[in-house]
Image (cartoon, rainbow, N blue to C red; front, top):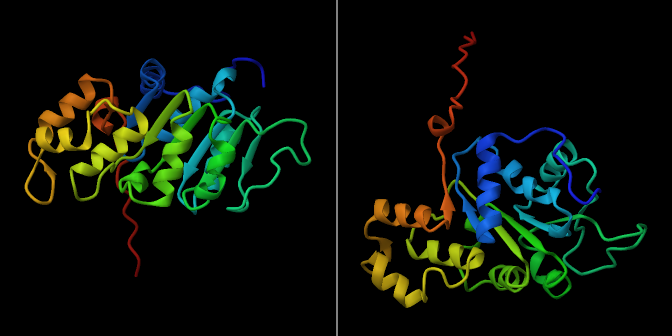
Length: 233
């Protein structure tokens, strides 16, 4: 692709805003509401040649969906979906590395040594998959992310149960910004289940420090379409 290019379908202003913040901070959790196009926010940053090659990590059933979105918004990028958890030659049958490599979380462990230091930008789609640090996929993701210059996490539901899961997610994207795990628990959590003591204050802190951006449909003026009722007899 050209050194820098515009997306074939222009991003919405709020998507571009999130991409710009990610660029400034080198890492960002994009926690926009479902249906606001977090995928496009991730693709915005692929329009700069110095961010390539890119690694997109997503759920097992979503690589082809990502490939379709990339073909729509950035058709000039070469996209490759990893076919195996065992590394193989990415240059086979092509004259250069793919611009975008798409993997699911389970294949990541086998590719960690190859992709670490190779990819410059990592997108963790549904990053709540990395909420537990004691897993092979977390270790592989961390190994790759540490050497990338830009890291973006996408999820409308970054945690499931415990506040400390937020620490693991943010640590992947902006290491050290929440202190040590013990400092985070002491400052923000309470009880044996490590829930966030004051969610509103913590959310405001994440936004203020540029660690997370979250917009709802009403924030960006994109309401759900009106309900269509079709009676079935």
